[in-house]
Image (cartoon, rainbow, N blue to C red):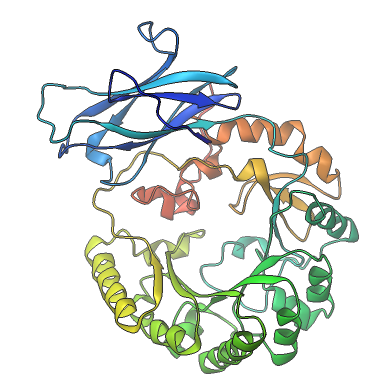
Amino acid sequence: MHMASPVATSDANTRRLFCERTRVSGASLQLDLGGRTAGTILIELHEVDRPDAPPLRSVTINIATSEPGEAEHVYWPPVTESNDGWFLLRATFSDPSAPHESSGLLLEAKLIHSQAEPYESIPQALLFSPISQCNLNCTHCISRPTRAKLRHASDATWAAVREVTRGEKFVHLATDYSGDILFDERRYPGTLARLIDLEAAFRIDTHANCLDDDIAHMLLRSQLREINFSVDSMDPEIYRGIRRGSIPLGEVLGKIARFMARKRVERPEIHTIISFVLMRSNAATIKPALAFAQEHGIDHVSVVPMLAFTEDMLDEILVCDDAAYSALYAELTAEATRVGVALAMQPPVKRWREDDIHTPCEVPWATAAITANGDVMACCMPGTVIGNLNEQSLDEIWNGADFAAFRMRVNSPNPPASCRNCGMARVRNNRKAYAPVRYARPAVAAT
């Protein structure tokens, strides 16, 4: 996706944009609706030297589902040979005679692309799971359906990971997806050491059950850049119901506290987070985490709406309950201000939408996920497996026809089923984005 500074035009609602890449397939727009709550907006893409000719592409936006202050994302069939080209993007109200309280509708515009080729010949970032199981069976886990069989990453898989982390433009390694890297080390000694031996900066997400002193020692002497303590409830009984198989919450918090005490002395630059997947069952139990974070110097508290990956979790979705979510947001925001702790939590939604939509995604062009069985996934969302390292090399998968076909559909009017209402590339007022189990359905065949 390329952001271009507007070049002066005779129309405040037209932007002249340069596209560096092939297959321009949409645009992200910042709009000033001027107080309007109904009607439609027509978006047109023109060749820059033929502004009065019929548009190359056109789409409409329904104002009634536009979230005030949020970007709007529109997709169209790609313009194949768009690289190194200039375009005009124009926005107009369907009823220009209706009152408008500002002088311009189109404030900013970014072009979206769907090129087949990745940015580099190998991924620039990885999400890696060296083992397929965990010591907990958390109710909301993204990989709960895939953990029935224990698998370990093969030497070939580790070699592919090392190839990426040694790349000249490598940026980031994250773990874990289908388990907990600290549990991996406790049950299979050497896993964490092998990760550290990659000599790459990395992030871990951990439930902290295995954050013992010896493991803390290893982490604090590694290239650990960020650690997220995923707790999910500050109430011991509710915590035990969500984190099935966990040690008592008090012991978990004690391990986090001890780690933070050492971290402040030995590695103060490591970024730390305590996080909560927001559900109906834990909403009232999160507030004490703000005081805990303040006491122990944790950088921020993250509260993220749950994504339902299994049918039994659909009733736990809280974010769509406007009154309950708004009240919780106000309560946690006020408490965060009072204790002086940063809170990462999305604001309440003003207008919900029912149409399929996701934000522009750049993940499959720069990042891959590799699981313990050798699967190479386009991202962390279920249903995005492209190939397997036990059958093909990473080069053959990353630069192959299947990955190219996937990339060409991600930012398009007909995205893959897993992208259609993506919970990661989320338009936050899209109800469907919070229920992948229900709305990650096969897309209609392209025409």
